[in-house]
Length: 290
Image: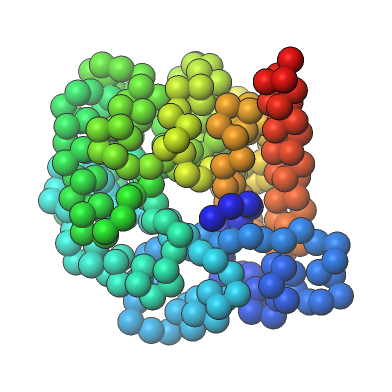
């Protein structure tokens, strides 16, 4: 899977159903709007026995390659892995044949109660050992590597033994999993915790980063909140350019989960991502040739 994608949202189902394959809503505009190379679906929205979401998913899947992105795996929880959930996830993967499956490097609940939040891990050796075993169990059941995404965070554990980027890189190596690098989350956490976001990016193992997320956030002055309800800001575009120079042309998508605009606005923003990537790759080539 290559190129640039969008998150599939219910507001845009009809746009994609009526598209000509270019991600547009009609043939009259297909020559001027940028293509969507693939779509990311929220796994839990389609882990149901039937209904309109699955109908649209099956229809859109015929013309648009897809990847699956989950929010409920809770890979870092102390609770046992939910095997019923994993079997439903595997069934959905058989249905739509995604290029990959991702979820978040976090925990979402305790004592079988879902807190509906993506809570950060303590960055310790004990947490690493716990995660490695669980990631390997998930990968064995799914029969494929799992992508794990860095989350935005607002607090840190006093017992942390390493940085977040060291923790993620070590986990990817030990568990033999892959990474979904959310550049916006890196930026949000860097502002909230006072670290250099480029240091985080530079520590990522390039061979493990399979996908990149871009999104917007809210700026509250002394802290940022990851909301996915704004366009990508200039600082995140700059960090994305640095990421491309460091990691190359990794498949990239834009997330929008609230205040969702017309598809045309997201397509224009995706076209901007193409331009940022192309410029960053040129700078990379020039630096290598110098």
